[in-house]
Amino acid sequence: MTTFVLVHGAWSGGWIWRRVADRLRAHGHRVFTPTLTGLTDRSHLLSRNITLSTHILDITNLVKWEELDRFVLVGHSYGGMVITGVTEKVPPGAITAIVYIDAMLPENGKSLADYAPLRREPAPGFAIPPEADYLIPPIPATPPRMNPKDAPWMDRQRTWQPIATFTEPVHLTGALERIGSKTYVLATGFDNVNLRQFGERVKNDPAWHYIELPCGHDVQLAMPDETTAILEEAAKAGMPPR
Image (cartoon, rainbow, N blue to C red; front, top):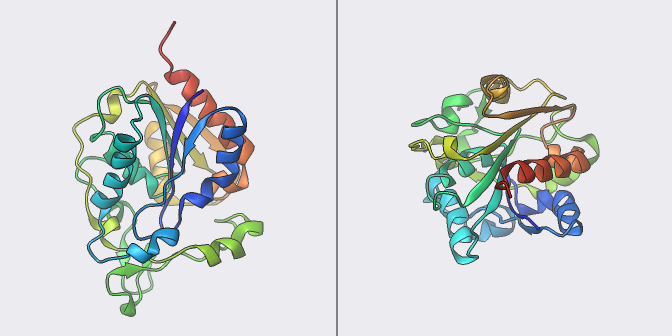
């Protein structure tokens, strides 16, 4: 049995992992799919005080109070910002494997907005309407970015997200590099330069296992069987030798 902590992306919630979580649990694994503060089923806690640090603390506290020792940490999209920050907060060795699924893979001192600029006017990047104040609305779930069958459901489910989660930089000292099993999964079913840059960074790095899947951004919805297999392989790679 392996313990998995699955972290969702922007505007989303733990429910987006349902298909993968069901498969992992059916295989005997222990799975946590927390929703980050202020989003979807925790939108009643929405506040302008929510930052990237808040979401990093969400996962760090889950690890602490569930007393998780050796587990696989997984992040999708914006969740890559969160899990990268978590590597600095949990005890060394607690994370046996880490998996980025079409996710941000930030460098020290960088925020999501450094890689995907936020704009008030129509332009490449995330467009923020003037009425947004401290929030940013979700990108419409249009194909090919999203799985066409799931697009209407996704548009219903997602909620606005505090801009500070996109603009606060992450501070790193190298904890990520010390994790033995590192995997990056790039979705190739749509052209997203903001995410492709991370795949290009690690694809030839021997410290990383690089995988491409022919689907839209929400890999865990479009290809749950393949995603489950990737997570289980990453877990095996992170197991200590007998």
